[in-house]
Image (cartoon, rainbow over all chains, first blue to last red; front, top):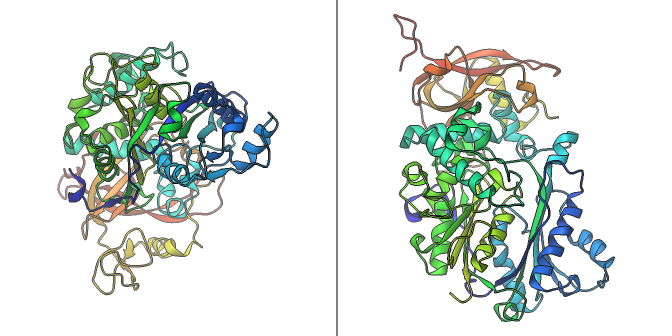
Length: 408
Length: 150
């Protein structure tokens, strides 16, 4: 399916930012099960790592992006509080945007950053996201389902029937996808197994040291049929950050720069209501990916590695189809075997392990992984990777970020 | 922790539950162009008209898709699992998908797009005050054998 044929959503209106933003530094906190840590402290650890990676100091930061939609983020006040205590000027000008952080915004943050960089309002912009959901779950203080259960149409038309939380939505979508296209449990399993294989090579992954093969996957019990626990993302504590600057400035910094080549954004007209989405077995990548690929001047076949926001295996499979890596409905056959593996696969995918096996940091660690791959620093390194893509997904929205090695 | 009963004071969906109390399945229908509009919204997505009276449906449709919840992650349903929840495409316009619980069924015998029909039952949850009448769906029994139609 191409965007012009689908009528249930639309692309966002984005500036052409190709070649206008570089990612000069990436960093992560430790990822873990319940740690007892405050999400702001986790975010500070990630920001320090990202600045160190770039060869910059907190005093160099004059722009900050975070996710305004989720509580407990490293916002402007928290940033000033923490970094003033480390020798920065507490009153210095700071360009800020709450339209950053993780999820789809991990992919679209460079669009807003490009304007701030072009206008000179900022020169070094940090985008950061963190969660402590594993800790909060143990304490009974919130979960990823809260945003849905507090939505009043869902509370009145879905919750009374037990259609909640997210594993139920996506089991229902997976069942319909299986019906329409013949997708099998083994094919969903191939995605989970590929992610685990990569996480097993990544010392920072939550599921490092816990192997999973297809037989073991198939032997696991159903959580919400047709999904097993292994089809669902982790719940973990952790954070990540990346540092954006101009391509010119990035050339003078510590690491080989990676450039933003294209960005896309897609919206579903049915909003947050999956039950009513016009095409039930598709994602707004249908609208987002073509926009990003056109901006970057590439085709899906030019992509050396792909990371996707993968709350569930079926969401990854649908995005692979909707972004044009295969025809709609052929995603199941496409992901079988070693296709998604970093070594020998046709489309190396979530080479850090993704939300399924690396950490549940809502996509920002996916962008970190793409940057490391393009620098040749990854644990499951794709040989000579030049172009890497992040696909973000937040239910009614999708985003696509195309990154390119600056020398490529 | 959020409960599972509907909030009958929430105006946009109040008529859905009032109809269910009369054992009717009703959704808004555009008075101008006849489009069934689901979920409720301010204006008709086809013609922008703002008059959409709640209108009864036949209660027949097809099982668009479903999930078999083996282990409930939503606490009010902990004692109900395993249960089947999913979407019914109504016969008047299959773009209208009603979220429901599928009852009186063998989960292994369910098929996507099989005919289903509404059945009204009382709904309540442990530890929550109140009871409502809710529209559930069940496979349509064959008139002779009583077995579900495929």
